Length: 298
Ligand SMILES: [Zn+2]
Image 1 (tube, rainbow, N blue to C red):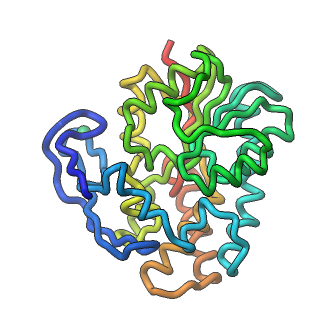
Image 2: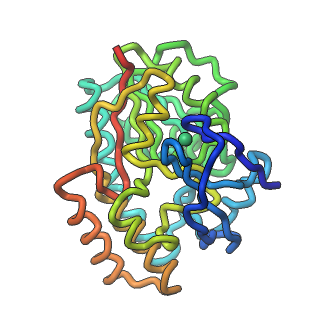
Image 3: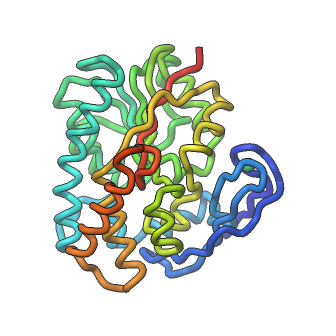
């Protein structure tokens, strides 16, 4: 069942314009509309599958962000890049928190690979993952039990030094309630790290409706460095730093070209990813994915 949002998730305004119609290239081949709020410019998928019906749009062998399958060249490259990018994520949390080790909650931890690297570096780890198969894999990898839902946990208020959402915020139906809950779990000097695609990037403008990071209908929201701060401000969270996620550009470029041409071309895809990063190299706000380092307002 589709649900129609009548209010902008960021500013509550009720007037939107059509922005783009995108196809679900990965699973259903259905088309979905992205609208833009006339007041705050926030872009979101509307109408969208409701929370009860979104699961069917994740059911595909092609949707590899949640799986560890080593089949296929693309999956192989993806795994390789993911390994390098996992190391860089650990460095980010250590540098930004100023802690060698501490307590971390990875919201939407998938198969648990990032938490694994944290665990190996003596971080005290917690994870949430709604998708059952991924969660079981993560539990197996981490040898700990994980909750499927943040509202079922008994985590203490203000107990985490770091909370991370790696390409997760754009998937959350209960956006307000979830952010509110996460903020309540963050220590007063804790950091919230949010990585999301940037639909204001030159990369998004180049590929238009074929841009892989629109990823409808799984991506419910399409953030930019202008709109994410507006959303977080409602919870007294400010963005401290904008950082590039250069490894993500290659994967998004490869898939965008595949969406547009119907073919997977590694050489062109690599060039596209390189070009995307070149366009953005002087300004991390222009990267096709951005990591936002956030803190409480004082
Ligand atoms: Zn708005």
